[in-house]
Length: 326
Image (cartoon, rainbow, N blue to C red):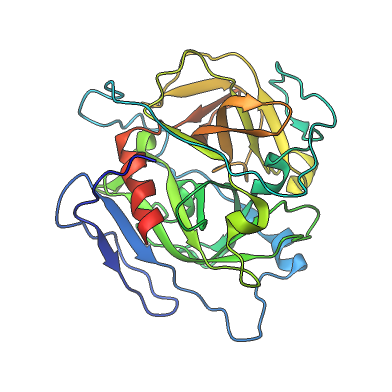
């Protein structure tokens, strides 16, 4: 893996349950880190199956569809950086071929590594209400990085989320591989700026604690990552846990041809996955036999017919490297 230097990284500490507006890092164009406040008490499992089922789908920020975009020319050509998937022992390989032109979501029944690495992100928002989003374990130096969306970490009023956990392979209230508690969260400094969300930077990284002495990657494996993608086309395979698909209790997917993007986003295609799928992984070069691929985006926005994904460019790469080093 090619490592880039991380500059201007600021770690902000909060007491239990407190919130504050985002503080700009000492340098522009740098990842912004926050230690995750938690109300977990020793021996007290906050995220019971009942509480997980009751968590409400994460809503996109009110201003996320305003068309706000970065002022510089977006998506300038950069050297592509690929980070390979990490297989997991005992992973069930291909079972049923997925439909490659499914604008209407379907339940994922094809097995493979993605059935283990994809999961749900649970948290408590700045309004004190529990929410659920989607996420994915990726290959990293310490095996502890989960990719999701920025708006799962900070709300429209600049308040940070608390009680963040990731549950890989979630299904019907079950956590078959455990609940990975987040200790640090990372967003790009330009994501929440001047009181507004910037859709092209709507990605985030959670650094999670081990479960039973094993990291997330040691437990379920890790998907690949692709930054500054120069690959022609896209598989446009998107997975997540939308509330309008089996009540958010099973892993769902859409796939299909690209359409014209909007909101300053890089990727777009027809998909009906609703609330709760925010943060779900968007793949390129997906292997149908092993269920592995290169994540190039996250599900960040949706209108009545179309899903939109942010670009994993140099900003996402720096954010990932910062999370990887945390």
